[in-house]
Amino acid sequence: MTDRRAFLQLLAGAGPASLVAACGWDGGNAVRPWLLDVSRLNDWVGEKILFSSRRLAREYPITERTARLPSYFISREMPLLQHPAAWRLQVGGLVRRPLALSLADLQTMPRTTYTVKHHCVEGWSAIATWHGVPVSAIAERCELLPQARYVRFDSFDSGYANGWDLASAMHPQTILAYGMNDSPLPPTHGAPLRLYSPTKLGYKMTKYLVSVTFTAERPGGYWEDQGYPWFAGV
Amino acid sequence: MHGAPPAVTAPAVRPAKRHHWIVRLTHWLTFLLVIGMIASGLQIYGAYAKFGDRGGPYYVNPFEDQAFPEWSRLGGWLAGGLNWHFALMWPLIIAGVLYLGYLVASGEWRAVLFRPRDWRGAIEIQKYYLRLRKEHPPQGKHNPLQKLAYTFIIVVGALAVLSGFAIYKPTQLSWLTSLFGGFQAARYWHFWTVWIFTGFLIVHVALVFVVDPASLRGMISGWYRGRFPSHD
Image (cartoon, rainbow over all chains, first blue to last red; front, top):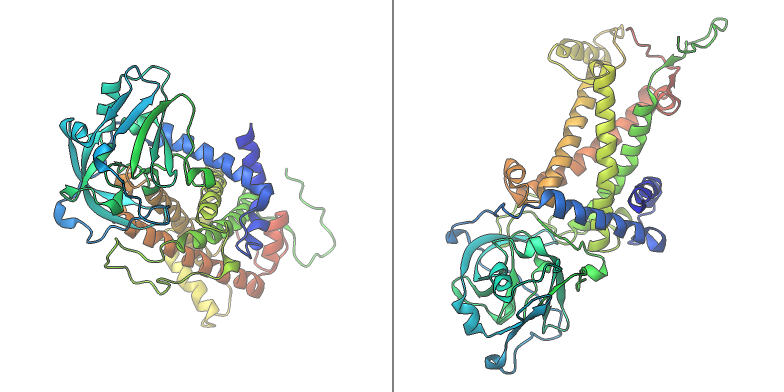
């Protein structure tokens, strides 16, 4: 069992590691794989024990909105569509009916609006209002195959992507948002469409969406592949 | 029944079995793990070095917008700090539960838990330290001031774990996060436990060397040969 071995290694490594924490040391090649093994264990704890598909995040009155919600993208310049009218969200993978949805199509689908707290992995938090289509409504329309266990969200922001477990994606507060604070989603926050959920850390919410793909294998993600926690539930 | 050492001719002090191996193991594990938790925590802190929702107001914090020196941090970058922190938390919790379980199961908690009736003794031992009293008051395994300190740090340890979970899962454990006054308040309390642990560590080590160096050996081998015999 690698997890147990990881624990023992950590026990042995913790002290000396702490004492030579100098030089921004991260544990080096010897420890990093074990840290990532434990991170996978924590993903499991987060997904199977602490996450509930019925528990809803607290909603706030709009008077508590934060004045300025920080945002970022990984491209050198802010990603903008050349031809916004030609944009379609491609829904595919393990589905019976692949879809290509325009923004107008999405706006005719069930709409969820909420004012919730955003939790960034860095430690900051901020409150904003979001509106859009629940991912579960998309899944219903495209008719998932039983093998679908994960969802991959891709963007036009230099390949930024995220992989989600199906249960988190089907949570009633997980939406594809086309609006923020009662207005159309601004380009700084991922226009025309972004993923949003108050049950995840900010970096799991793919902005500038182009496709939603249901998969059987666990997809990686931009930050996740660099060592950030994969599940990242809050 | 437990192999008491043979009665040597007029020993200065008779060695006494002081600490069970579970206590010694969890003591040193906790020491190492808390240092690892603090170092990785200081790394994480640097990513958003203040406490309060974006736009403020912010909680009073002498370290606002400051980075801690590189030698004090573990993890190299935010993801590394997080992975260390979320890996060390499990053995730390296991050590804490093992220790508390031992205290309860063995009845040793009586020697550690500070109770209201210990106030009198606490005042007496304080008088002794202030030289208002000549005789060292009789005591059990620990004197009442020690009990107060150990009980306090165990409570702070529990608060550190609970506030940590309040930050880790503010949505799934929202009831816990609310108990601490919200996400940013929980971060704030979690950060304060760092300084309480650091202060405790400094005073604790200083007292060991100044007052009773033999207790260090007691915590390593389990045998105590010092000048403060238990009157139990």
